[in-house]
Picture (cartoon, protein in one colour):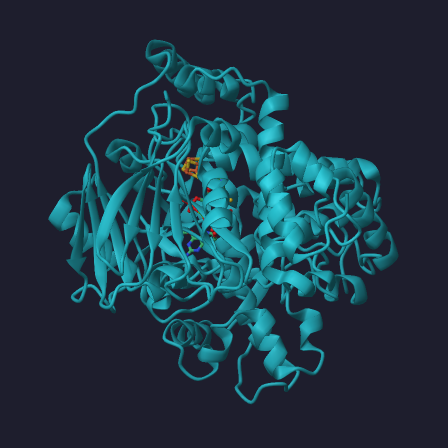
Amino acid sequence: MFGWSGKFLRVNLNKEKAAADGYTASTARSFLGGRGFAAKILWDELKPGIDPLSGDNKLVFAVGPLTGLSLPSSGKMVVAAKSPLTGGYGDGNIGTLAAVQMRKIGYDAIIVEGKSKKPIVLLVQDDTAEFLDGKDLWGLKSFEVEKRLAELYGRMVGILCIGPAGENLVKFANVVSQEGRAGGRPGLGAVMGSKNLKAIVLVGSREPSFAYPKELQQLGADGYREVLTKPNYAFWKQQGTMNTIEWSQANMVLPTYNYREGSFEKADAIGGFAMEKMKVANRGCPQCNMTCGNVVKDSSRRESELDYENVVMLGANIGLGNLRQVAALNRDADELGLDTISLGNVLAFAMEASEKGLIKEKVPWGKFKATKALVEDIAYRRGLGDLLAEGVRSTAGKIGQESSQWAMHVKGLEISGYDCHAAPAMALAFATSSIGAHHKDAWVISWEVKAGRESYSQEKVDKVIELQRLRAGVFEALTVCRFPWIELGFELDWYPKLLHAATGLELNWNNLNAIGDRIFNLIRAFWVREYGKEWYSRMDVPPDRWFEEPLPKGALKGAKLDRKKYDNMLHVYYERRGWDEHGIPTKTTLNKLGLDDVARQLGKRVKLRE
Ligand code: PTT
Ligand code: SF4
């Protein structure tokens, strides 16, 4: 095979053994890589109903055929497992040198099985895997872990690690790399912690072989040059994703005070232009000439890398309007290994619960010191922090009193940074995303704001599906960053050409979209298989707050979602997807996508419509 190594590395922590495992060309063609491989492996290899924090879970790190190559923004990797936060399929996407090194060690995925008896570091150097004592690193924060490992193995090796939150099995702990890149929102850091795996170090010296290496090299170089010509390039380098804060404020979609208000009185103080004045450097993922990580000094003079999500969730959503303090919370989250989006949600949930007198602890809105202390308590599971470490769905279940109406999650994953009181398509995108409420599968909101907020039309449904195919399917499977396309308009035509040069496969966009659909449906099947009978309760619905409590102020004062129209839109979505009225893929749909075996297995668990 060209473009793929044709091998996974299977690592068993119980036995401290690692071995190469071949996979077929048909798997490569059907699932491409990254999320596609991860979903396939987890579907094939996990028994339904396993405890995500037991040795039965498997942690998959996967790359795609374009990952890590000399072409725009290719330094990305997918990390996936059954999620301890949601109980369904969970993954995340990290920009990391580990992605580049994974290609160099010559594997397309690492599958980590079992559980080590003691803290351990997995070191993979080409064909050799070593299981090193991780005792001295256990308990350390992520930046210190990376520093020590880089001192031993060099700055250009690939390092993935967890912080204390992962060790303490916080349900939204993530995996950290390169001091400020992090991924695996649905608790994949906790899965790594449950396996006593503190870090993975990858050091490779090989090069993958390609179908048309010269053409690939030329296309990659042309691609980098093309990125530089795009009109928005300069502004992107100035602000990266932070430019979205002003836009969200102007359009009343800024998550504010636990998604109550849609705009924040101190938005200017935490926005892209405020950040520009404080910025000391640009940082980014490997192989990228768009480097969009905005490095600022936080309130303790430490460096912190800011993105839209980090800032709105740890700023507006908890009522904090001081950017250096927001940066400090963000830096703490990176060091502790906590997902900033879920963290901003649980903090806001605690603040609202405290305001309403539902918990005895005083957790005021926007108070930096108290919040900073609570963040540490969550990571170390102390007091109220221990309750919050389980995520908002679980916390609301425990404190009761209708708090579930404003526990802002879908299927257990906390919502990322967009208020949907007046954005039905974005609400649908959150509700049907493949990992729970995350924007990565279909960031439809910018289109929706232009197309008209009020409508619940079929056009909106189709747009959500179109984006899910592309973003949740193709980009996650090629495993390259989607920002060149979304943010700069780097043309989609580049990708089939690059794929052809790397693998020799001639795939047009119809073929690629079909792969996107296959992956999306396989992940849906995974969720249904896990939830079984429970699936029949309403799974694809955003929280009550957006239906019941109108926006209290601003240009869209009074706006809220309409339940009947939303349900109708969801119904249309199911039809367009070829799913039944419960959102379960029909046999015909699965068979059409070549997932006959999945249909057979799923049919044993729930009733499948023809
Ligand atoms: C992603 C989610 C996001 S989405 C952000 S900011 W964003 C948060 N970043 C966190 C962080 O930082 N530290 C931390 N402790 N927790 C964090 N949680 C949040 O995680 C990220 C960029 C961004 S910045 C986005 S949108 C794009 N995401 C891509 C994607 O998903 N797929 C893809 N093919 N390309 C993408 N390009 C962009 O990458 P999750 P990163 Mg990320 C500090 O992890 O679990 O996927 O959730 O990885 O390397 O930092 O790049 O406004
Ligand atoms: Fe990473 Fe930003 Fe480059 Fe994407 S554009 S690869 S997120 S630095």
